[in-house]
Image 1 (cartoon, rainbow, N blue to C red):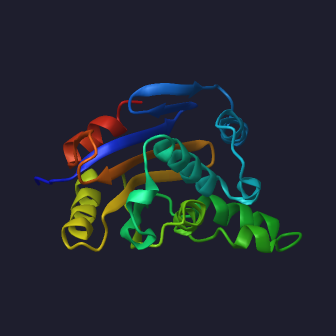
Image 2 (image 1 turned 90 degrees about the vertical axis):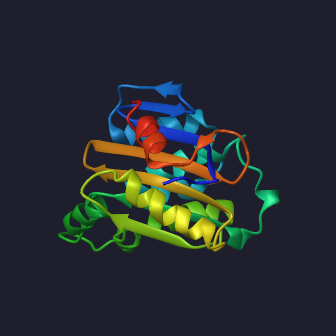
Length: 203
């Protein structure tokens, strides 16, 4: 697939490491809960709702923060021109299991909110005021070709002008996020599955 669009920024979070455009920003040996909180403080986050999110939303939200910081000029676009396309393998199973555990004693509405995988997209869109198309796919593994095909369609059909796309998956102690900012002509490298795979597997 050949696209006129480019990957203008990338962020990979995996195994205690946060990387942007191939450069390591943070490395830690802490478990997922402590790591996500440490990453939020490292980024000097100022978004109190972060503490209420489930781990999938925290992971995707953090990856979007890193991806867009100093890389994205939202003033170039109308809110409905910017969309989000994500995928993962475990849906919201991590939050589902925590919710099932919680209702043995007290059913927490706060946890129930996160028993849908696409809530992570909602958290990203609320934070950045994106109002364009958004999609969340469940795939056995990161399928760059499928994601690239869908995003390319949305851009070519002018349903979007810019898109945040990629992968955000959490289950217990295992997690990985790989987000890509796709725009028409803003530097970077060609938007295609090969480049997404290369960046995704770098860490």
